[in-house]
Amino acid sequence: MIMDNEAGSTVAALRDRRATIVAAMARYIARPSRGTPAPEHHEIAGALVDATFASFNGDATSAAVLPENLSRDFIVRFGDGLVPILTDIVGPDVTAGSLSRMNDAYWRAVDQAGAAAI
Image (cartoon, rainbow, N blue to C red):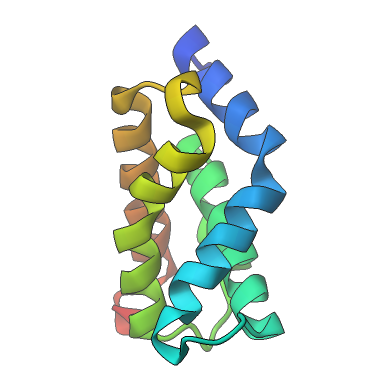
């Protein structure tokens, strides 16, 4: 897939901050327990971040990296927190349009994984 300059810079800005994004998303999906995220939360957040990036790049197989035991609660919490957390982390480095496309990419990846989890 050929990306425009904005999409290419979005991917670069986000990939450069992947570890920070995964850590923030792990804390966010673990929040109801009010504790430190468990290794499971980091694993799930990492898989969802990677699937989102791949889907943003047009990779239709991105859902293959999602864990089979992914709960609906994690899917929804991740989706709810994605844009606010990305905005906090990347700030002005990424446009609102790119953040919207990243959110669409997340839900597309989840959909590709199968509606049973949703």
